[in-house]
Amino acid sequence: MSRFQPEDLSAAEIARQQELYGPFTQAVRELVDATLRTTLEGDVIGEAQAQVEAVTARLREQQIEGAYGVHYSHEGRGRAWGNAVIGLRNAIAPPLSITTDADQRAVADFHLGAVYEGPPGLVHGGVVSLVLDQILGHAVGASGRPGMTGTLTIVYRQGTPLGGLRAEAWIDRSAGVKTFAKGHIIGPDGVTAEAEGVFVLPRWARSLTDAPDIGN
Image (tube, rainbow, N blue to C red; front, side, top):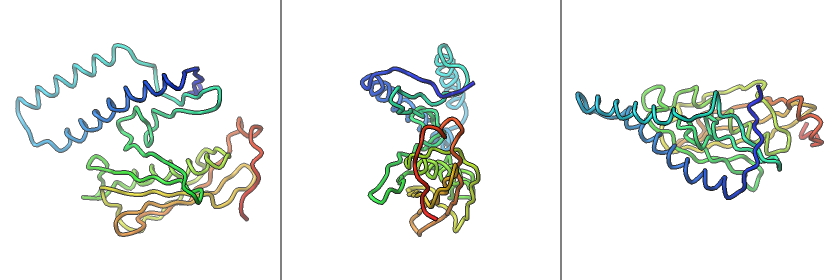
């Protein structure tokens, strides 16, 4: 079943939901961080567990089935609020807010805290990959040639420290149904990881785009 869900919501209604669910999801992120780093013990933890279980049961009373999917308007604007990297309603997501700069690069300044740790004090390598896949895909989509990840090659130059980071991605070239993108993550001491990806235009989109090949 396709998880691309058409919807007919007004801009005002989408803004209302964003104002409602955005802070709620952020509160859950704070809860996850607090759960990891608390040093409380005994009855306090038991009481907190009971409260969390009660809230979870309340929220389960009315929910969608399965994944959130991508909701899109008749104009083609999509809301990937369930996305694991950028999702407004996904407490797992950091989340990244990705923009396009004057050089047509996808750019995101973001923060990864303790819950994303792999080696002590460093971001888990799988999370680094997750972020790079997302920002390369964003650059590809912004070029007018949406693509699904075909291959993703990452070179880890140094450990990526927890804390404030920057991700950048850009189109290297395109040919036929393939778009080739590059990107990296930058920490306080320079580039920590570099990525190259091949993104394949889905069959359903091949008749909808006439974007020319780029580069070599």
